[in-house]
Image (tube, rainbow, N blue to C red):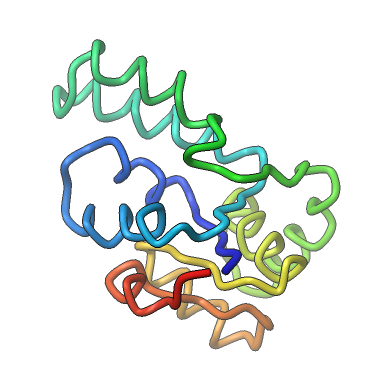
Length: 146
């Protein structure tokens, strides 16, 4: 099954934090994980923030940034220029940041569920009738394997 993930989910593959088992289940269940290419920047920023706050060391942060683009984690990246117009429209409709809405646009285009730990974001998509199946990370293990 194809699934779209956001940076908050992807970071949990590398860092011990709540919902890590659910995030890792996406890999263990051999889902085809895709994301907009901006995922790399999003994960790098989250790793930087965690290192700055002392939650992880620089030695832990650097491999996260180096490895996030490996096929073992992300099967395919969707180029952000292909998603920009729809992401912008979703952001205007939902009142959410445009960078978040790239993930919804990607899921919509791929007709795939969007897995996110940001339940407020998923709720905003649902409330505005955006045709995306939002799956809270806490329920990711319920997704069927390929």
